[in-house]
Picture 1 (tube, one colour):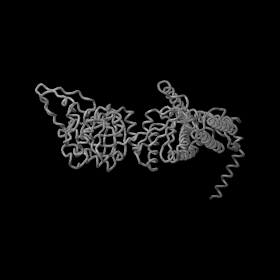
Picture 2: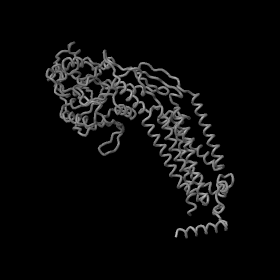
Picture 3: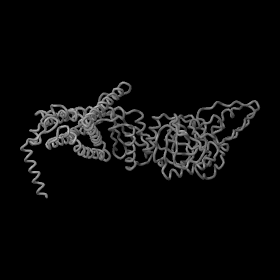
Picture 4: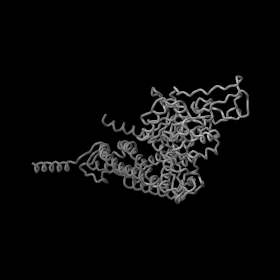
Length: 603
């Protein structure tokens, strides 16, 4: 039973390796059949080229862009590009004004938008809301009078409403105090038919219009000039582009669909107070996930306090003043009602997002807002800095190194060297599959530094085998049978292998975290191949050698096996034969006499 346990464990290890390789191959085949996977790793800028985008900051007349703002924008764009799954991109500053983004291949429009969008999230209280869609002219009623506007009331619903759903079809969303008093129309008149709908605009005689506003929810922010601007605001693109977003002043804007227009108070909580943003499906009160997608925000200490203060104030206000609009780049993405104060600094945004849209938006919010707004100045195709010629040289160097390792293994270990060759082949196959799958799933791109990391890993992989084989040979010299030498040598060698690979992996992590993007490719492939080497030594090399030790060719120490006792210098007295070992009588006698003398001396 004891002799069959190592054999069973070895077969399980080889089976696990086979299942892993087949699984990776099946995943890649499925990616090619049902998705846009490829048959080879994607290449980076230096090997294949890509697209270069030059971003120019939008500034008002006389505004100067500081170096600090430019560097901050560059760092944020780097984070956004990485979060979008674009590997191997380079982001640099050009002079003291522009930012240059170089991306492998042709970036999607989503990637372009994520790069240049300012993504400044702000929370502003809603002061008035109206439909941006032209309303049909109301005809006079038979009675010759118009009913007064109904008063707004706090919503009893706990579900946040989107910006578009907050737009009124009547004047119920406009504060009663701001609604224009309808003029009785006994007869239809041109002036009555051409006047704005009562629900479409706040009155110029809003209460407190001449008094100084006390807080962001105060209706005194609505001045006659603001009212006139609101009445003529139609949410067309020209008006939206002309919006000046001042955090300390009220804002006239629209929702992202352009179906509702808003008067918003000054910023109550700014986007720089967001400490984290995540996306996912909203959970109900029972903790079960629903089909509604949400963006969950966590605010820092100051932001949580500001959000708690504004929610306590707004929860008792009439509609729409109990709505807090979340604006992104000066557009309202959602305007939920407050039914209770939120004191824990955690806000949730829902607005009919898809999970992909919510993930993109949460990444932009999490990585901060650009200190400047940018426009795309130019976009050109760029050629590879190294190209296929350098890649070919790198592959040739890798093949030469691999051949040298194979020649050395066969010369040093004879047929035992085939274990090294087989292990390197399996490791190379797994590395190829993993890099190709990462290119499909995470848009990982292999650059020249990454190719260098793969080539260097050949030597590290060979080191693991050498440590193991030499331990086995040492055990043979001590007189153990081959099967016992393999198990004992493995117990001692695996500690050394774990330490060596652990050092390599830690070095790869440090390089990846601290180094620039050009060195990160080397660090990534070095760490990946180190993990693959560790896995194969445990699941392939040791199990394979365990099974080979039972073959007569290796067990009996054939001269070409690499385990020949005479070639290893095993003393005649301790040479093994078959599964045991034999000792010649003279040598055994001498050994016993020496041992007796040693005991006598010790006594």
